[in-house]
Picture 1: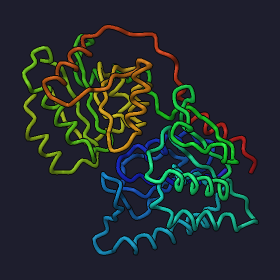
Picture 2: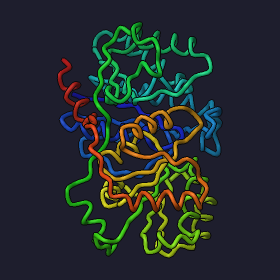
Picture 3: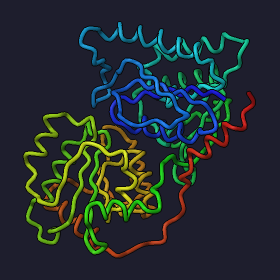
Length: 385
């Protein structure tokens, strides 16, 4: 079958990478992945064609949508995108349209999605299945009743199913959306979506760094990086604060590609810990976590699932703009998979890191469904053309 997959990331990279992993799992199909955020330099699988709309992003407070094009205003970009998205659909004539997050989120992109969905409904000669691809936790809304009314109406009017990329034993959609009983379409839990490290990744990375098994590696990451400066600065200061117990610990920092350039340069200029390296991004992140003795990160969906897939000890700092990262982190902390940092004071942070590095405790952890991409592909493969 031919699948058109729409993904719009607006602040970080999580939505893009989760969507890419799902598209990667759809290897028995022809996939066209349409993305509309800042470009992320990632190779595409052979069966996936990447199509980029003119990029539109949002500010860290999720209040303002903006386009990067210097000669065209937002309304012009929106008009171009709306026409282009419909053109792509008509050109590809897919059997399935998968829409990431909408209508549970991305209200600011109704300008292009609602016309596309209305067009699909109006065309009777070719039946295209429309599926919502949804992460585990929704962010809170100011007017919950109006929001849930709009979501239920859009789902019941235009969609055929909702695939929830979560393990229902850990988090269920009704924890952040109250009107599931009003949705007439099937709600399918696929398990979490994440790539897994390969069997030789730990040795490969550590050999590349010249590390023995007795030497320690810490991997620090801030997702896309747009809201990561304070966190990254605090972790960097924790390693240069003079805690001798952390001496000779190798540290690899991935700031994220969207960290402001001036903030990235400031981290480089302030780097006085000899074993600490700073990079923007690696496409090999799961392998780095497999090689690490501890991960220190923010608590986005992708990073948390990468941590679980790698089985690495982890300290996390949830982004507090909304409930999503904190709620996920608290659930995983209660299960014993990670620990939440209580604050970002560099001296105390240094102690937290030392304690976690020196801990030999390996509790028996409950299993988590991490094959969301495979389950998604299996479910889609059962749909009739």
